[in-house]
Image 1 (cartoon, protein in one colour):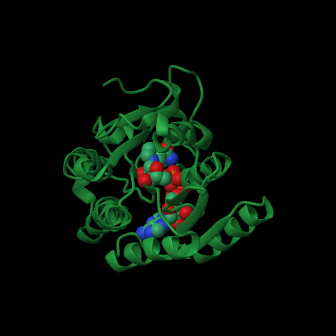
Image 2: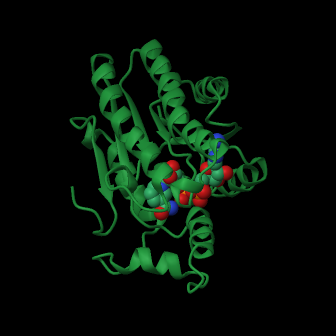
Length: 257
Ligand SMILES: NC(=O)c1ccc[n+]([C@@H]2O[C@H](COP(=O)([O-])OP(=O)(O)OC[C@H]3O[C@@H](n4cnc5c(N)ncnc54)[C@H](O)[C@@H]3O)[C@@H](O)[C@H]2O)c1
């Protein structure tokens, strides 16, 4: 029986790349996104490629949506094996300017979303009495703390901490929890970060912030979704069965920890 993986926020960006790779690895895939249109178009694309796939629209920051997502995945394919808490969003700007609603939204999606997703997935794994894997989107900003990305960095540090503590609590249930920490990938998230950053620096033009952040990458190029998917593929595989509670950096050489 094929294994089943849920990837949140997989209508586009890194999540879509991860879902494509896990499909290649032989998983049945459940896509999720808050953006119905994006989800539908990715779902269509996956189906055209012959992938066994379902799509569930939902907001990861809502606990009931996350439990609904897991229950629809189990209903569609009979079980759950891997749950990737990928959905996340950025907040850009000097923290002195950050407003309460921005702070709440960032924590609600990036942190609450990961906690609810892990609760929903773990409950299903425990019910199934099977091995389970939770894989969280952290970031280099979960290891290093960046100016202009203070709130975002705080949410990703929280994800790294929760990866450690949930791994400790869930090991006795045969559940591993790990995280992938990407560097600088040219997704719609970075398009928005770039737009915001240049507002604070009149000498910068479109693309300059992205260029500046990626200029120091040792391996000489920004990250592609496939680079991130390679790590997630490994973490989702049996080869990673002896790894839990780790937040592993994949950034081409930016942050060293
Ligand atoms: N792009 C990077 O350079 C980078 C670096 C480090 C970490 N990350 C992390 O990787 C993850 C994916 O990033 P990305 O660059 O692909 O972002 P993205 O903005 O390009 O894509 C995120 C996807 O998540 C969806 N989404 C947003 N809020 C949601 C919600 N509440 N519920 C369900 N879906 C939601 C969006 O509609 C979108 O399709 C994020 O957690 C991000 O913090 C990205």
